[in-house]
Each structure stands twice: as structure tokens, then as C-alpha cells.
Image 1 (cartoon, rainbow, N blue to C red):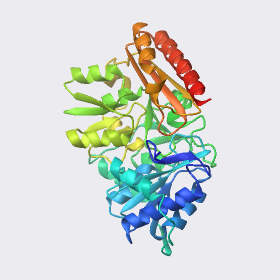
Image 2: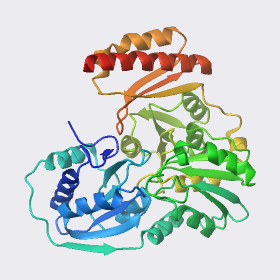
Image 3: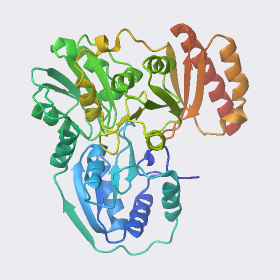
Image 4: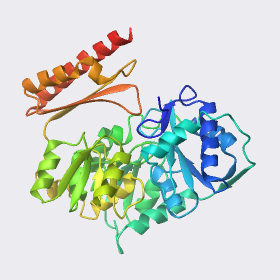
Length: 422
């Protein structure tokens, strides 16, 4: 089984699959891949970040450019500028502080194609070899990242006159996000910008935007921006304190000829795009899948309802703050711009599971058929690619019906998984 999930190698540090030996093996594999060329690294604010970085460097050696604490897109931007032949972001994104991860980026800053990732995974099992002497260079990643974001914006772009709240989830963007918004002229109210190594994503940020939703009207802000631990996704809050649905974010940045979404995108988004004459396609969950399909279709926008958005003319990987800036380029009155659009009622249940047997072996077809017969309009069942969780999504004409069917499906499947694992 591959050690790589939806977004790199991720787990509880230092337990399998994310052990010091695994990190060192990845370092060796990357060094073998790029030869003497530099490798760029960055990390979020987790307590385990420095230890994981050191384990990676023990195996890697050679020329390494350390950008420090930085959003994932900052490492991506450094690669796009030619600072290295590969990159590693030490982050577990939206996971709790006890987890960490190794996210690998290729030349140019994009995620590795599936086949290349599989080859890298196989290389982790190679016998250990001596690493070349380490040549570690520290570079001001924050300045590089800010310049890269500003270069993506149209000439004259400004937030002057806007009071903006930003919640950085005590994560990678805790310094860069307020600084960049201020550089664009905004009056900034900063939340979630006091990391202690263990509070990343804890009741704050894109996973928990309720605090931001209260702070925005209380502080007289026009808009609020919530980021996650590595700042690659965002959730927006309007001036009244209402949280914008993730599919609404995609609708606001949509452009012809089309938008690539995932199986998690709401059916109401597809209908709204169709009414605008904008194409829409769904792919499996994961920004790499979105990026590959965008490239194949030559479409300018793609993303997930979690707030992870990819934009032609943006950075090589998704960046939550840049997404927010692209949205704000059309004005801060988000609800008015959506023109009354609302997603169909949807319920999401995330259930922890002790194992991940194939869903087909659990009789899911019959369970899905029963939910649809009971009035659900769309059902999606899948395992998380980054956590030991079963994810259940149900859309229905009424919220109560969606929640009832989602819970019933989650309970039935978790019981079957427990039984099969006994």
C-alpha cells in the first residue's frame, strides 16, 4: 500500500507511516531524483516541524533552500522561480497538531503526477545510502511569497478603504497574511495569528470559521478570510457575518469555458454554472486531480468546496489568500454578487474508522439505493485520503432529510467496518 495519500505522506508523528526513517528515506529518494540540484523546503507551525525537517535533511543532504514557516504556495512559488528542482512542504494542512506530513512538489511548483509519486513511494524501500554533505541555505520565504502573490494581481489592485479580518488558523500564514493584506492597503484585524506549536487549526481558521463570523460584524469589517494550517484553502465571511459556502466561492471566480470541481461539489453549483454558459466537470477528490483535468481541458478555474481553489494566472498550487484576493477584486459584497444563489441542502458526516476495507465489499450499493429511495437526491461515500475517516455526503430537498440519511449511512457503514475488522 502506498504511503502517499491524497496530499503526501501524512500521519501522527513519529508513528508509521510518518517516522524519522520514512522522512530520511524520502530525503534520499528526492536527492537521487534531482542529483546536485537544490531542494526547497518550507513548513507550517506544528511543534514537530523542526524534528521532521531534520530527519528529512539527514537522508537528503546536498543543496537545500529552507524558506522557514510559509504557506504551501510559497514553496510552490519558489520552485516556479527556479530556486530548486523539487520541494517539500512539512505540513498536515487541516489535521490536528499531533499530525504532520510531507507534501512533495515537482519542478515548476506543481504536485507530482500520480505515476511519479508512485515511483517515489517505491524508492523509499531502497537500501539506505550515505547522503552528500548538507549545504543548507536560509532564504526569506515571506518576501518571496508576497512578491509572487502581488505579481498575480492586476495592475493597480488595492484594498484601500477596506477593513478586513483574517484568521490564519495559527498556521503557516500567521505572519504573511496580515502583512500582505496590509501591503495592499487594507486595515487588518488579525485572528488566529499566535501559534504555539499545538494550537494550529484548533477552533480557528477555515475548519472553524464561526469565530471569524462573529468577529467580522463586531469589528466593522467588510469581509473575513479564514485560512487553514498550510493556507492553501480559504473560507470567506461577508460583512454581516454569514459564512460563504465553498461552492459559492467557486461560483464567484468562475470563468468560461469551464470549471473543474470534485464529486463533493454541490449540484446547485453545476446548475448555476450551466445557466451562465460555463462548463462544469467533476473529478475525484484532491487538488492534483483537479489540476490534471484543468490542464487537459485548458479550463481556467478548478477547486473543491473546502475552499481549495486553483486559478489560471495564479500560483502553481492553490493559495487561500490569493483566492480571496481574486474574489475581492469583484467587490466585497459577496452575497449581492451571488444574486440569491444557495446550495442544495447537504449533510456531511465524518466518522472515524479502524480500517478502510473496500467500500464495495460492504454492500454500499444497497445502502445508497435505500437512501435515494427515501428522498435523497445525491449520495457520496468515500474514505479520507489523509485521515482514518469515512466521509458521507448526502444532498436532499430538505436539510433534515439529508442529515438523517447521512447519519444512517455513516452508522451502518461504520458498524460493517468494525465487524469486518474484528
